[in-house]
Every structure is written in structure tokens, then in C-alpha cells.
Image (cartoon, rainbow, N blue to C red; front, side, top):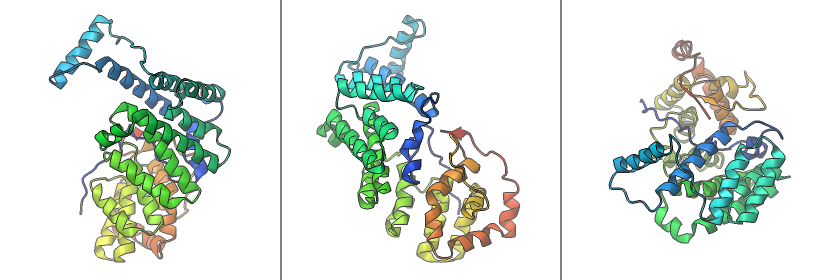
Length: 351
């Protein structure tokens, strides 16, 4: 059985699934860390928000017409788009947050987030940053993320949720809310509010089934951890073309749990091993995962293996016979010969 390759998008928010200390707070970096890949992504988002302001109120008959409009603005501006001032308090506060995400000093980031809330208490991203940078314990982190979710709901309005469900994330103004809700889900999982965490994850996928944030990887591990195998199977089918390491190894362990050992389930594991042969070394503790995970993920490489095992180790550990099965299949002659050809980068590095 061969699955079409479909990799995680480069614009996804890295979804935290490990211990709370290695969740969203880990993105904060050191007090004076330089702008990260995350801040670079926010810079791209800021540019997209600026384009959205320029195009608001315009009516285009086609994509080509919209592109011509932007090209004319670039030509008249000497290669630069004109800058429009934000029109609402929420937009002004969000502009402050884009500056905060790019700041290389922790105190400045926090001060800017607090200033953004002075401009508008409906700035969800300000609560996201404060949750990551200032929370003293998991409960405070969850409270701040919850405030961010509430702020995002106020900023967008109930009608927006009714009309745009399914289109979230693609609409720039939804992203602060989506970040806050994913942070809340992770924080709730960390304080053993597991049912609520899973409900938030399902809702995030309802709002954005394209899943730019990678919520499905979090949700899948949570469902397996809770023994909700039927739901995990349904989720696997919903994204059946996903060929990431996390999805393929989860598909294999789900098969072992629900069907037991069989030729079909063994083949699922062989497919996963062929896609990323580095995972067993970490699952079987032959290699240790570093305290700080790599900032980028090399598809098919060790960094992807570390990311998966950090999230999925418990599922394998608590499934009877799973690690022994992995060791046996991984050590088989056919898998060894394929593995020997895969000790090289197999794809681009992704944030």
C-alpha cells in the first residue's frame, strides 16, 4: 500500500504536543535571543495584512485583475507598496504585536504586548506572547491563552464565525485567534484537562480543515493517548494522503492497536520505516532527544524523527508489545537494506 506524499506546510504553526515546558513557551527563546523563524513568519504575515488593507473595498473580476492592481501599485511606488495606516484599534494593536514578535529582547517583547492591550483589549496575539513569555506556571499559561481566545472572539464577532468557518487561517485576521486557541488546547492538556483540550483541537480543524497549524498531529497523539482509537482512525482517514513521519508511524501503531499483528499492519510499519528510518533509534532509546529540539525539521531526517518521538513516545510505550514489534521489523533484512540508502537529507528544512 502506497500513500501519496503530502507534507506539512511551511506556514504552519509548530504544534506543541510534548510536556508543557516544551510547548508554546519554548518558542520564546532566551531573554535576548535574535528574531527567530517564528518572527520571520510573522513578518510575512504582516506583509500579507498590509496587502489586505490595500485591497479592501476593491472589486476585482479575476485574480489576474487583482495582480495587475498590485503590480501598478508597485510600479508607481518604485517597487514598494504604499503603506496604509490601520483603521481600527485591533489593527493598530496587531501592528504593535508584529513589532513585538520581531524584537530580540524579552523585556521589549513583553512591554510591547502590554502596550498592544492598552490600545485594544481584543488583541489576541498580545495574550499569546504573554502566555509564552510571562506565565509562571501551567495554570497561568492556560488563563492567558483563554483570555486570548476570548479577545479573538470579540475581535472577529459571532457572525464571522458563522460565515467563515472552514476558511480560518487563510483569512489573516483569524490567525491571532487560532494561535491563542491552539495554545489554550496545549496548555489544558498540560494541566490534565484532556477532554477540553481535545474539543478545542476538533474545533480548530472545523474552522480550518486545511490545517495550516498542524493541529491534526496534536489531536491524533491525544486521541491515541486517551485510547480513543475509533476517533483516531477516523482522523487518519480524513488526512489519508499525509506521508509525514508522525502520520505514518501513528497509522502503524493504530493498526497494531485495533487489528493486532498482521501482514497489513507490518507493511504499514515498513512504509513508515522507509519514509523515516531514524525514528526507531529514538523510540528504542538508542539515541537521546536533545533538550532543545532543532529549529527546523528536515523531512525524512533525524530532526523530523525527534519531533515525532517527542510527541508520540508514550503511545508506543503504553501499547503492549509495540516496541518489541518495532525492533523486530526494523531489524529485518529488507528494512535494513532500504535503511542503508536513506541516511541522507530527503527534503527541505522547514520551520
